[in-house]
Amino acid sequence: MRIVLVGPPGAGKGTQAAFLAENLSIPHISTGDLFRANISQGTPLGKQAQEYMRAGQLVPDEVTIGMAKDRMSAPDAESGFLLDGFPRNLAQAQALDGALKEEGQQLDAVLDLEVPEDEVVKRIAGRRICRADSSHVFHVEYSAPKQDGVCDVCGGELYQRDDDREETVRKRLAVYHSETEPIIDHYRAQGLVTTISALGEVAEVTARAMRALGRD
Ligand code: AMP
Image (tube, rainbow, N blue to C red; front, top):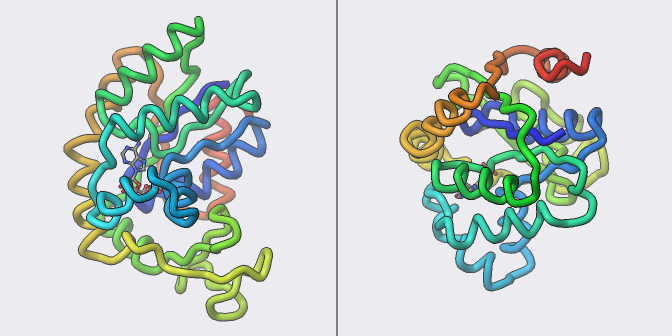
């Protein structure tokens, strides 16, 4: 299956993407994670992306589209993938459509995670992520780790993302509304969009998503 996951920052895309990708046996491709890996390795691509990310802005398409296409053409993504955080604007959606068409492929579904805006800010401000594995996500209030600052799953250090500060979150939300939401209509016109609520327990949302994909 080839799936795109969309939703505002804080909808739980990363968490859901990790579970869904595992259930569906397809790779989870997160452009945010790819950028963060490049930043921590100090690559030229990471250096290009860093300032945009810190400001809550989109990294330019020239950089992002090439990186996403490279990852999608890796052998493990041959028979499917779950895209998390890409595409994030119409130009990226069109580039993805074009790349898939060239390969004679198409998307199977676009899953739109819906969450009220005040909930988004609460979720993100308390979010803590494991340095060793970004799919290990905690929240200081909603899913606190047993020991402060330490990942329950692997013992890695938990940290707050640079761009998870409230002021940057508001900027990221504004960018989501103006740049990313239009891709939902783009895909709706192709009959691909299913919207589900991202409220509730993580496992409940995963079950909802699997049902929406016809895989329950
Ligand atoms: P995420 O981890 O998906 O929340 O992404 C974190 C940040 O990485 C975003 O706020 C952007 O600055 C950058 N980013 C991730 N994916 C993209 C994309 N598809 N296009 C442009 N910038 C992106």
